[in-house]
Every structure is written in structure tokens, then in C-alpha cells.
Length: 195
Image (cartoon, rainbow, N blue to C red; front, side, top):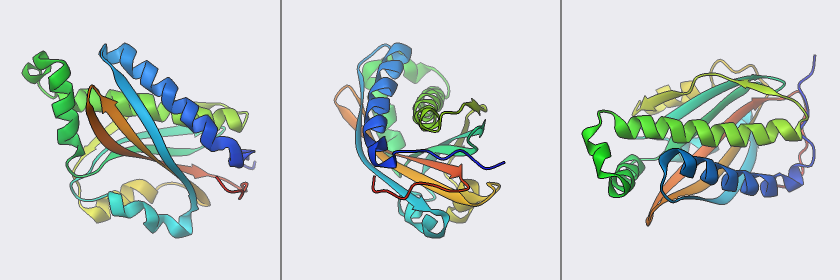
């Protein structure tokens, strides 16, 4: 059975911008302080060009991974490059000083942020494909060697793959945290139109 084809990729950037707004509202409900998500760039690449993903993925990166299956199969990754996890901690503690007394507070909030963002973005893709997906439990990974990251990103996904890369700025209060979302999807065919 072939994988669903996502139509109208030329318009999907607009849908992802709307998804970013939905994510920000959902996050505000969770954390109870102002959150914004500025969507800036999106790129769709093939597995053959997956090295494009790697420059912002280093041994100091922090990653939330979310597997999904059903009508679409693959995994989504929220990636904070080196130093951005510290900016997130600063932003969270500025908004809620009591978090500093909670063990692993930043990690727990980061995992929830990743869960929300990835659910909304992947759900948007599923809507475009007129299908449904089932989400697995998100996983948090802290600082691995680059070769291990590459394995996490691209292993265990049956080719052919398409890889969607989204660049966002997560804004909490007055602090902006740069993030990348990478969604690795299995397709039998796809629309090559410009994003």
C-alpha cells in the first residue's frame, strides 16, 4: 500500500505559519505566561541531501523526538542548538522563579514544548494528506556525539524519505530561543513544487 501524497506543497508554508500560531496559543495555556512562535523558514529535502540538516545539530544540541505512524510514518525532532537550552532556562526562570526549585524543570517543560510543537506541525501535514496519525511518547535527548545524532535522525525509517526542516524562534517574555523542527517522513511519491 503506497503512502499518502501531501498535495499543494506550494501552499504548505502558509499552513505551517498558522500551525505555529496554534502552537503558541497551546503553549500559553500550558505554561500560563506569554509565549510566541515566529516561523521564519521552511525547506523540503530528499534523503540524499540529509547532510543539510546536520550543521545545526552538534554534540551540544538538545533534542525532543516524537515518533508517529498511521497514514503517515516517521519521526519529528525539535532541536535546540548549542546554548539555546540555557536561553530557555533563563526565559523560564524569569517568568517563574519557583521552577528553579523543581528538579529537571527545564527538561520537563522542554519535552512538553516539543510535544506540542511536533503534534501541531505533524498534524498539519496529516490534514494535508487527508489522513490520520498516531503519536508515540516523546523522548528527550541531551547532548550526544554528532554521529549518534545522525543515527537518531535517519536510522530505522524505511526509505524513501522526505525531510521537512522548519526554523522557528520561540519567544518567552522578552527572550528569543532559536529552534529547528525536522520531520522525517516516508513517501512513495511527493509533490516537488516550491515551498
